[in-house]
Image (cartoon, rainbow, N blue to C red; front, side):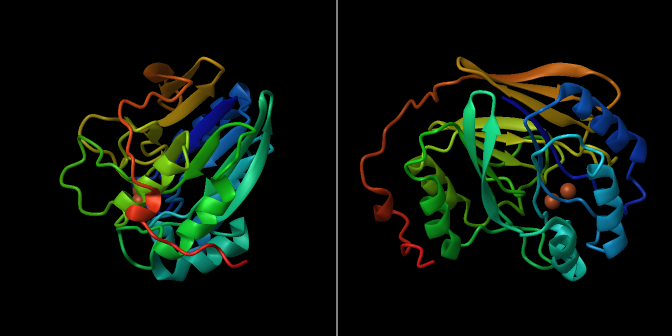
Length: 268
Ligand SMILES: [Fe+2]
Ligand SMILES: [Fe+2]
């Protein structure tokens, strides 16, 4: 299975570079992925024209499964209404057919209107649980814009997922294979208790940090390993990270999840 993960397109800022998103999309089409995960911040201020311009690029992706989520910038100025008009539901679960079988993907909206920080929200844990628990037909992937773990080289951490501890415990208990996030504009990878958290940089803006240029991720999920490569649009690809396919957990935790995080069974 091949995944392209990109985020932080940021149409609308003077630092947006259309040639970078165009190059990334051309490269993506040549790569022919099974899934293109666009992990939020399509816009800069949530304006309609910014979403429309972002969509005009994303519509050029030749992949059956292009999944787009909201970022904090997209929730400015009531931008979530435009997102819903143009991209559909802000949170959803879907099953994706891949050459090796099926993937369960849960795409979450962690944005809150006009806040830089994010939250999944405990009202959603029951639904996430219902979608992922017991799934055994292939990998379990979650998309969420905000980072669950701090990303190095990004300064002080002020706007992570505010309920990241609870969310991490839920994802660990559900044995989620991979979390795809954006937000910090610096690519990085963590693996905690078997959950790989993969962050993409900004694909098409110069809103970069330090010396790390715009980038996106390509991820290959094969029977033995998960390989993450970093692509700089128009400038090639470099190896970034590699995991064994079987999640490596170096610790076990014995109390039930409900000892730490309680939530009601979903009613609908
Ligand atoms: Fe961003
Ligand atoms: Fe963001």
